[in-house]
Image 1 (cartoon, helix red, strand yellow):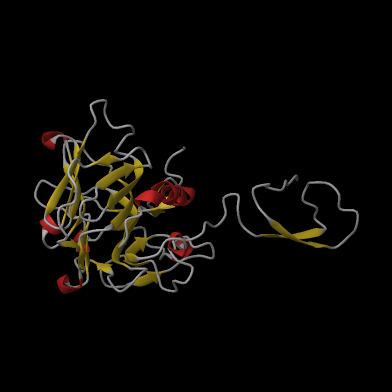
Image 2: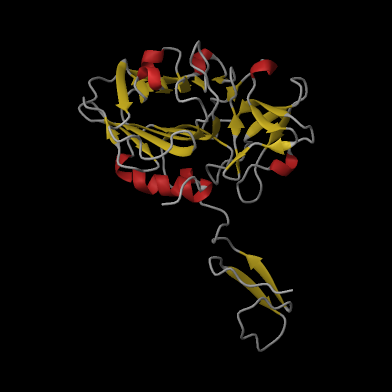
Length: 313
């Protein structure tokens, strides 16, 4: 049986013999994998400050000691699920039930946990005995009419509408003709991010502080398929600045008008379904920062993609 060292990893060795000069694993040596080469990735909030909320199926900060999600098979029994030693969702701890639903998605930054107390509209993490995955990473499936809410409307995100950065890792996975919400506040004019399909000009639509920002499909079409896993980053500058929309760090779509005011930005629901606006996406992560990280978008996108492997650069 042959085993070779992965040169993308660093190994700690304990040598029980002498004359170890070749480059294959020798059964006389004990190896400890110290990471790299596809191992654990530095949690993103270790490198970027001023997050307001953070929801993910991976650990976002090395200092976070809480859980990722709470699941239920029936709406009556509940189990908290944390992370494994590498900061991944601890799928080994999921109950053995064939189908599991997410009734709580913990905020890894503060106390604005997302919940759903109605079993019939809880999103799904395990179906038919298999964990739902996108690119080999667990994802929460928001099938039609599924959504999650911050616990208590008075506890929603409600911050000044300027100097913001949104990171969303999701697979829209929907009919291009439909509208699909990603995020919405109690007042949609103060917080909404959605895809508007063919009937509305194939655009991403963002509202904050009472101002509307539309990012229409370019004349040559979108550079990638929107209806596959993507990393969406939106940066929102100060008054007089710009709102920019990135897909997998591609050249941003910049809204033609500058930010005109500093109203409020709100976020209350994720993947909401309202009327003809139907969420069918599979979401893995959403983070909101109270800082405009536009100058760092490329580095942030690389850090996110290093974990999710959403696309090949």
